Image 1 (spheres, one colour):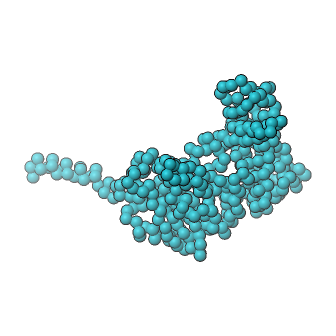
Image 2 (tube, one colour; image 1 turned 90 degrees about the horizontal axis):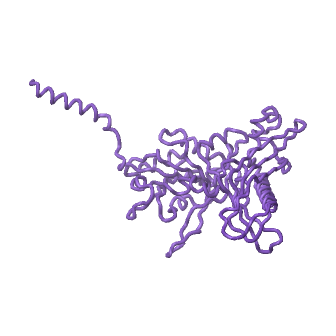
Image 3 (spheres, helix red, strand yellow; image 1 turned 180 degrees about the horizontal axis):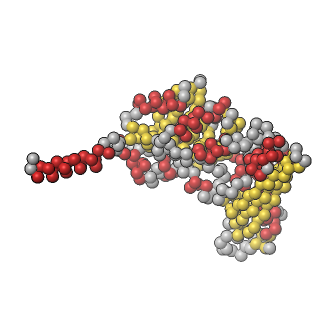
Length: 388
């Protein structure tokens, strides 16, 4: 063999060495991408909905192609979630990729009687999925929620369900829940976790029609033993004042001595502390201390700062108690007081706990201290002022 042939053979072998590692890799355009999974339960069968987004939607992430559907929803039933998913594999034209899955949606029936636990276990064990998957609950038909197109027909990857952090920057009515934190919460006292409750609304419209959009309308309470119920709309407002992840919220109250004048105040910079107070070793109450700042955006005339502070304190206390009492109706430790006691005084917790949580009553909340550390008048345009 000539030297020239030896060089050519060496080149071929070297090329084969560097390319052989890619032979078993599927090209991106030859895969379907799961964005969301919905789970329902009926007639002893899991009903699984797979929301598949097209590759162009993933690549652009802002505006989907106009000549193709932004998503398709596959549906199958099975005695287990895995059986239903394998049925969907049979009808798929391409390999299904799970690494971009963004959220998991449960129906009310899918959360009852521990039915959600094997579903959660499926997605935390599967090697392609991630722990940072958002989790939601709904009473609306699963398929309808998954087929809702975001405002201005934006990409489904930028919808509020795919990325709830975007919306909570302006208003933190409901705290998003990830699969990771859900698992942690179910394993910690009181083994109860609040999952955002999603419903379909028609708050938006174009020149041709009203547009359906999803909205956060409360929380559903999931436990390791099953589902306890929903706390919806205004009854769930107290949640946002009881954790430090609230970016901004609002309250509206009537100004004293003015028949028709109401004021809306933005609240932010929350710092929440809950202190368990054990009395006689057989009774515990919880003192709540909240520091926050307020911003006024629109008001007429002169307003007294003490009046503003008084109304803020009154309204926030009222909302905290209303949500707490709604939780008691469902036998739910909505603010996870059991965990506060567990972390600060485990001996007292062991003495008082029953099945992982301590008994609570309306009187279990002791003092609620709220300090409005700063009142910002916003951009000054007219002669209106805040009197100290």
